Image (cartoon, rainbow, N blue to C red; front, side, top):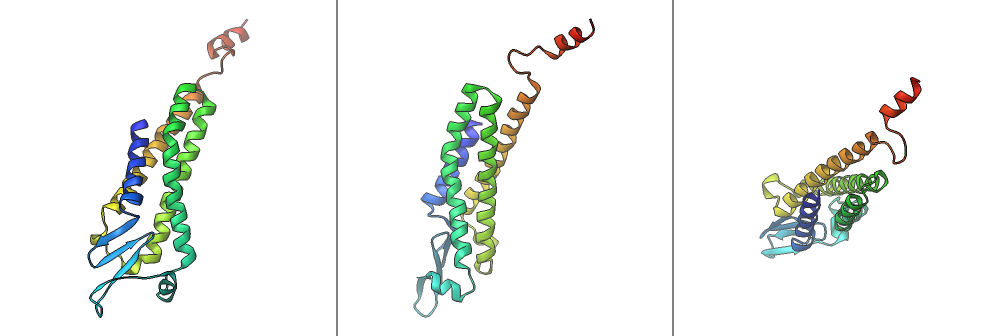
Length: 179
């Protein structure tokens, strides 16, 4: 699980910091969470648009800000998930493991929601063949988060079957009742 946590953290770091959140990064088009640049044929150069220009084009300002907030929150949560996993493995209790799926589920939901919201707002200017490595890194991070969530859920269910310390085992309880 730590390898999955490290992988998702570094994929998020690559997509959002190294690539500056750009989903498309081409010489004639740069579209990302903080950049929206299209080729201006009159000027012969890449022209970056501001919020007021995007609103005139039909892109919602609130939706873009919400998409940013969701996706960049996941990066923060991913930086804490290895520590949650280590703490849960060291404590090895059900209570410690119950926190991990909550954080991972929240991360997976925020990443999927933020990325979907961004793609829905900018779909007119996107072509699947133009998606960059930043998008692939975000998709890979989503897959790793879902794998972590599944693994953490398995750990939690494992503790459902183990009786609490101090309580008699199910076999001893059954023999005591048959006296």
